[in-house]
Image (cartoon, rainbow, N blue to C red; front, side, top):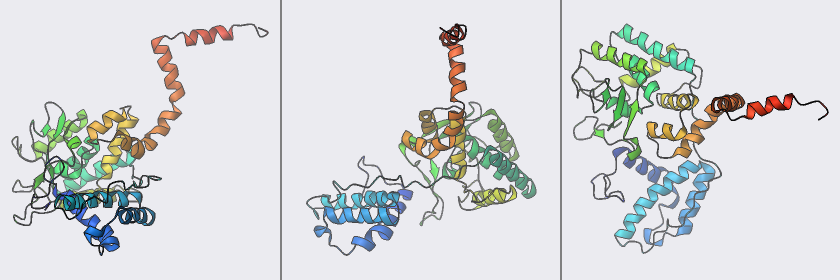
Length: 335
């Protein structure tokens, strides 16, 4: 039903192909092996709660949450079709003693610089322009790979005049079974539709990339094959990343291409950008997730310099606290 469009979101929108795949995986791998033998009309809230508890204990809280979300969609449809009188997912609680979010691999600034340099060197060897500008863009704008590969030149994508990237679509990771092509899909969430300002150095890199590609017109893809078609996400872009990481001699665990997004988020926080702004620019609707995943990597530096920062702030606004401190030092020792 999701694939055919007869089952839709609560807002009436079509489910994205990536969401359909995630729901199907959760149902097949986590739900059906445990409660698949129970007839739908006999399913109780206790059955669902036990499923969730087992997944949380044996795998992770995140697996339990994803399984419950997928099951809710299925059973909501069963209620609609009068196979169930009451949705047994209502009232089921996922334990929250841990977030279930895996520790992210945060690349250091030196590692980021080395990867970009290695990617450009790889481009020179292959006589093309791809890995260098792509890795630079991922580190400079925090894009998901699918978002970067779907970008066109011009005001609706990479706007070099404005120095901004406008995310309006994404490239799916799976080929369409009928056309054999990688389709453009809506971004991951509504929050993913966003404008991201580019650092001047990245704008310069992309100008050079455009000239190296023969000055493609507005509307043409930023990264494309020789026919102007989208690049397979798991093809040349991922291979270029892996070669650059290896050449840069980045320590294990070897980072994935998505870790460039993590590095961007931490760098933004360390640069003083508020978590609310980082969430908006990164396309996250949950500011708390930014704190949980990235705050602990950026906070140590901020905490260490908190005292000096407070002193500088006081001096800047002239609170008079520094004057009071000097007056206290001038008091007689026995006063």
